[in-house]
Image (cartoon, rainbow, N blue to C red; front, side, top):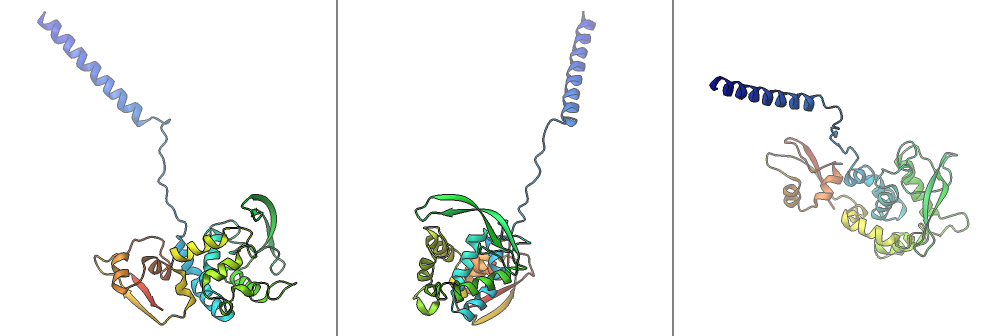
Length: 252
């Protein structure tokens, strides 16, 4: 009887071992289980995009009596900060400008507001540019020189004809864009990213070196600037810093 009990105990242990082994093998070779790959977002941040066009906007603003802040805000809004199909290479159209540029164009689907907040989808021909800079120059030329039937069509956006950038964004609503809330959207973008800084010349620029324990918030507080500004000036994609990294700091 004792031997029989030991036999059954041994058999149970063997069955348990086999079951555990089988489970482990099936888990190891289970091809039906999908392993989700890590998602890495390599798209530029809004601040990084601003950094690529800000100084061109500042220069064009000074030369053409325009608000660089409005120009940058429009580029962000119209191009989804450079990520839309129209803004991406090889089109490089940051402002949704229709027609042809040096006989180059691309036809894409777009949404338009009928002036009452109702959106409709249409196909339209848009200008195609060699670069962002060409797109920005063409935009500034349009605002400065108007349209064929009225050279002063956009005079309401000039710095000399307005008190603040909000006057310019209000004028663009219904003239440049059909979106009935265009000025509200532009004003929010300008405030969020402190774009007014680009309406003035740079008074001073210095370069600092990131030290151990530094963060964007710490550096911003130390130099009395905003975190978003530091990210723009240095075209940063994230808040991560590296010891020894060089950062540009501007004063206006």
